[in-house]
Image (tube, rainbow, N blue to C red; front, side, top):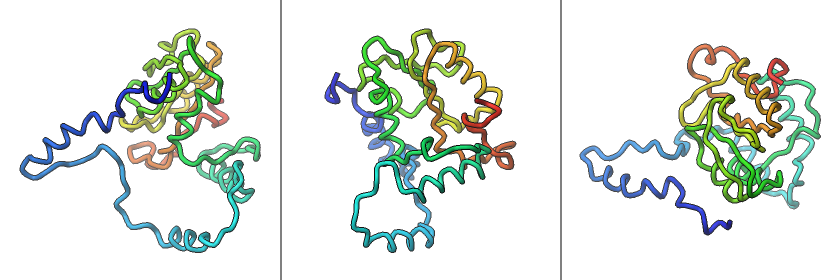
Length: 211
């Protein structure tokens, strides 16, 4: 399979509906892509200005400072301690890693990649690019034997669903039962607005209570 065999990306499919909605009185409330609208904080602007005179490509593994900051964040905000530099690698963006992971794991024809039912479309795209079969199944008991990779997403996109410690532990147990790699997409981990996650830390799959 090649990139040319993929179906249109979902955003392209909804273009005709968007055009029709824009003709409606009052226009459209577009929630399709979460482009930031708030002002960029000054501390970020200053950091970008200070970094503009760099004269070398960054290392693929990231600088020691970046990896230390990631490990510190996991300990401080996620309750995950004991990580080393060998456990941390920055990526260009989450979409690139999601799309490439099945290929990086050597998956192909006959392999199954499980992803949530309501899900970011790149989970399926990554599976198809590798030649694997994507299967939408949220419940660990529905994950079929022969699954090689399982994606979970908490808080979920687009439903916002948060998996608690017990749910995450069951997901890890099931992945071990079927011999699958489990990949937890936690890019919205700081966005817990509803109780109890507005005051409690959203659990990570790396939380000792889970893993």
